[in-house]
Length: 197
Image (cartoon, rainbow, N blue to C red; front, top):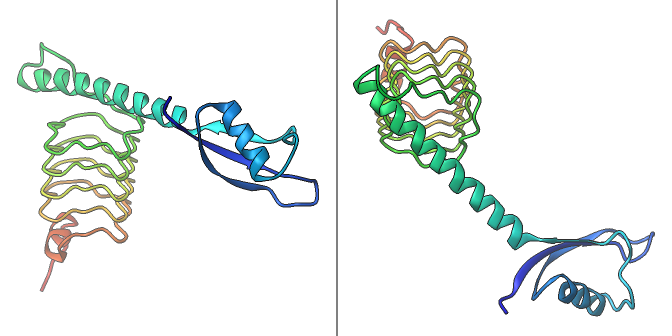
């Protein structure tokens, strides 16, 4: 039987501090036995918390896989729609949590992604031309060489985003937070329609 990872919290008596950690065990009963030995207790306190971290990790992996499958379906429908408006459907990713997703080269031109969370995602080389990204979270997003021409980025969070080589011609950056983003001054001035001397 393979070992599983369990996260625990234990307070051996009301005056002691709560201790937490992880242990490798065959099952919950084995985890309890190990904790009794470790803390030299005949019985564990009633409020001892033991969580199967392996199960949580597996559930998160399943959820991420399901999210990726759903996203691929939406992208395929959107791709068909961009070729022929009578086919497929425009991508609607409004308010979805897509943080840390790896989507380089995605074809999301004209997609509706208002309020979507792309923080930490990889959208390098993506086509986001004329996309609706109003209030989108692009905090720390890799947008290297992405096409954001004509995109609506008003009120978007672009803190720490990587925008090197990104095309921002005609993008709406009204009240967008660009603090700490990686972008050349020339590209930023051009995007903001600044006049340089």
